Length: 409
Image (cartoon, rainbow, N blue to C red):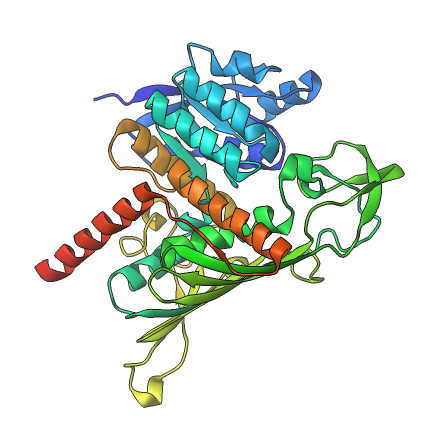
């Protein structure tokens, strides 16, 4: 039976637009998704640039108004990769137009907007997903398997750091990621959001936080021009930096585990150092995104003469998730592949083959943690994080399914 095509529209053509475009283009070449994405249109405000992006990335047409894109009859999925403050209106408009919505992280500019987005997709009855792409690194999938299977026993600690250095220079300009009205927050939403989602995915729900946030450089040159990615060109004049440069948070989980999450863009030499360590009853797990094909594991029940951290190259087809679609063992994959895996699973979700996570419920729950961290830093006190009932119910069902699978074995 021939696979049905599904029209995709992408809003945004910069750093994330490039990553998402590649994923939509490549997924059918390496996987067999139940729906074949048809790259119908890409959207951006500047016609010259979005036209060039359409030609370069492989989109059939382009739009300069997202409202036109989300209302096109030939588009069923709307993918959002714009700055954070634009996520909500586009997602809500797409949902009202009956489109499935796929959105970059964090879900929104703030918690209020995230909740409005969730309400819109639920009311419209459309499929929805958030692109926390690191969930789908095969090594993180292996970490999930080791923990969920019970092999690691009870989880005690989650210790996560996400460090970069691209704004250490005080002459780096005031790009949109350094402006609260656009980004919502700094290192918190940009980097810590990934760690929060990873902690939720691997350990459990974060229910209490105490945090500190700091801005090292208060004023920066205004940008001379719009530059994509993590680049910028300084111009004349100065503007105020009103987001955090770094954040540190102690977190408590609903299952009794404790954790620490640090995010900073002021760490010279650290380019994309997303690292976590999980200490458990029967062993420990370590992951570093800069070595994303590897997972370090330690098991307490190994014989004493062989105990120590083992480096697992997570590239064995038929053993590790997603790898069979790629290369022979130890022929490693990269950053862009996590987006392809995510798009593949989202297409399966749209087709009804498997429920896609993280969805907008997960996006809102992550936003609740981000919001609690900000309030904690402002008040210098512990703040409770309420867990969505839908998330609690999902956790309960997953626990029951895991218990049944263990019993069956």
